[in-house]
Amino acid sequence: MQLAVPDVLGEPGEAVRHVYFPTASFISQVTPMGGKDHLEVALAGNEGLYGLGVAMGVGISPVHALVQGSGPALRMGAGAFGRELAAVPSLRRSVHRYTYVVMSQLIRSSGCNRFHLVEQRLARWLLMTSDRAHSASFRITHEFLAYMLGVRRVGITEAAGALQERELIVYARGAITIRDRKGLERAACSCYRSDLAIYERICG
Image (tube, rainbow, N blue to C red; front, side):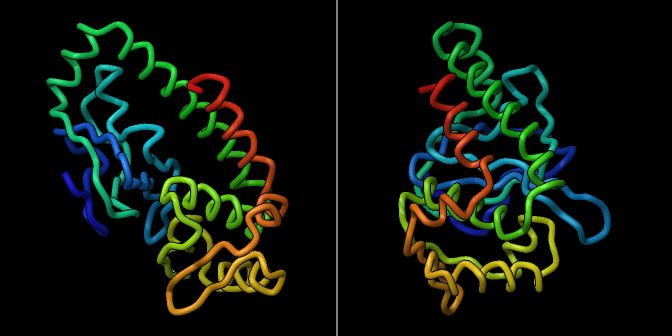
């Protein structure tokens, strides 16, 4: 099936009817923090899935899940997914290992959001998105970046401006292109490299 921006796949407290496996799309998982505040807590691309709670016997979404990158994905009913997990040990092991990776990344993200600079976090987010988009260029607005990172729009404008001034990215008309990936990796906080390392060690 095709996923398209800005499809909503789940809401906090709602039943998870389907589990999604992005193949060339990606799904943002956002938690509301009260009022107008939100924060992206996970991003699933072709390395993972949306609907992990089903694997743990909980068919309720804890997040607002929306398509951030259009493209194809596989979809399986939550009940069918649960039955396959029970019947196929290798699938169950893979999902359990991916669950561990996501938990590890969530733990690191909580510290990242508290202690790292907006510019570092933005660089990390751009790299994560590029990895899942399989492209150095993608469309995104400052408003949406502020929504994802849980900061004021002016903070995103300043951080993106600093990265562009260093010729690490090009931002124009709602599109971002990573111009110097190695430089952007150096500008990002260590969380980006740690996330890659834990995924490679556990699921690679």
